[in-house]
Structure formats: C-alpha cells, structure tokens
Length: 211
Image (cartoon, rainbow, N blue to C red):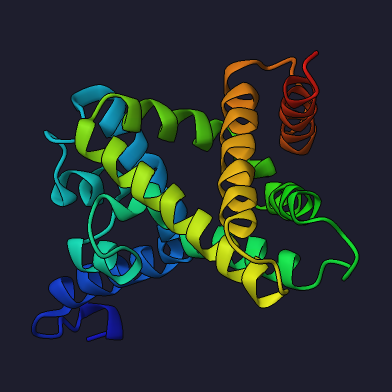
C-alpha cells in the first residue's frame, strides 16, 4: 500500500479549513479598504439606514468581527478620519510663525490638512452623497465641524490670541475649508483641494473688502 492510499481521519475537512484560513490571510491586509468601499457602495445602493454591518462585511468578504476591528459602527466608516484631520490643523496652528495673523495661521492650517484628503477625492464624493441623503449623518457632520472649530480656537488661544478673535478666526477657517471642500468634490476642473481652499479664502477677503 502506497502513501497515497492512506486516508487520514478528517483529512478533507482539515484541508478545507486550511484553504479557508489561507484565503483569509491573503485578503486580510486590505480589509479596511475593502470595508470602506463596500460600505460606500451599499450606502449608495440601499441607503445608510437599510445597510447593516453584516451587509458590509459580506460585501467586503470578511467577518463582522473583522469589521469591528477597524470601525466602532457603520457611521465610523464615514467619520473615521476626523481625529487625524483635527490633529493636523492643531499642529499647524501651533507651529505657525509667531508674527502670523490668526486668520492666516488658520487658513494655512486647513490648507495643510488638505494633503490628508487629496488622494481620496472619489471617497470624498461618495461620502458627501451618503451624508447628504441622511439627516442624522448631516447632524454628525455638523458636530464634527464644530469640534474642529473648537480645537482650532483652543490652539489659537494657546498662541495668545484672545476671544472673540480666536473663535471668529477658527470658525472662519472651518467655513473656508467647507466651501473649498464642496467646490473640490463638486467640480472636477476646480484643481486640488488646497487650491479650492485658497480660492474660498480669496472670495472671503474680497467680500470683507467690499468688492
């Protein structure tokens, strides 16, 4: 009897499990990216409320447990980068030249933050569409922007900028960023995000100058 004639107990099921584990290992490295893409596709197809975590995990080819390794809930697929964005803005304001005016420091900080989003234009468009279609997500977006403005204002205060100037400059920066962002995702010919923020700032300066 040759070795090939020997059948080990459970041999077939063991091989099946080994193949499954190998497949998981091969797919796992880009799990976050696949989950994000799957979520955006499903939000567009079914709407945010009708999409479950199980749906997203199934579309991405992973387990629900893997989903929760990367995201606390399905909303976080859309808001996962908020802390990183806030961190870049605060760091840029903190390190701005001491003589720089508050509004210029804030504008430069939001322009610096544009680099985080520049390579994700398609994601930004899909994300914006999902948020626009859902009132609870719109509210969450407003809270995120409010937190961003508050963090920017605190950074200005630590530079010695007093209120109401610190708060006004920070809120203005958020508004300029938002308008630039909307132009960036809405018009493919508008240039990169930093340029769109710069154009929004120019429009603001023209408005305040009465032009």
